[in-house]
Length: 212
Image 1 (tube, one colour):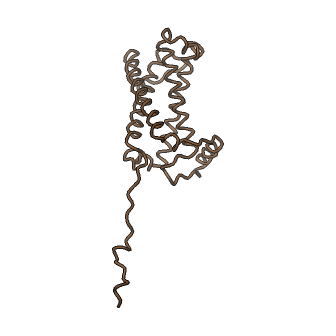
Image 2 (cartoon, helix red, strand yellow; image 1 turned 90 degrees about the vertical axis):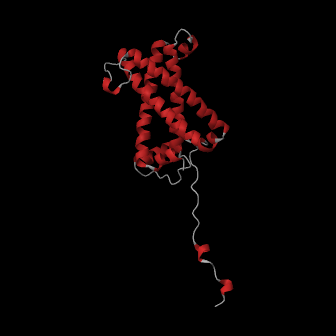
Image 3 (cartoon, one colour; image 1 turned 45 degrees about the vertical axis):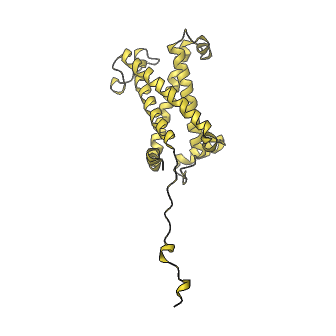
């Protein structure tokens, strides 16, 4: 047998490709810090709402945070500063690294609506978790806008005298309360949908922990 043309069995073995980084460390850290801040603000906000409700209902005290109004306000403001600082860092890093352009653009609203319709029918596929589909782009950008609007309306309520222009832009103090409540309710709805989608595609949870 002519051994000169034999191929080593080792060369026939497929090489294992290293797993690619889908979410860098700064994305994962800011993601979880934002999640913690939003949940704290949501639970403490419900306790604050109970002190002066907009509607004829109150949230059960068992699912609120703070114990009483002053305690809830302390939790709320502490989480607010964490959310603002961490959120600004997240936005700046997305712009500086080019991640915003790569992950969120182009954005097509019709395509996002088609993806959402497919998701509700259980027909939305997502083979490459490194890319966001149109529905994800719309939801993630939308929740950023909601958080900014909710924080600004909260400032108009908290520092109404110090920020008169902001109060006027919100339509006045009472209107700012409505904007704040509706914004927080929309963020809560986003969290519920986000958790459901993670349960449907559990790999996304692993990626947000390990990055790969």
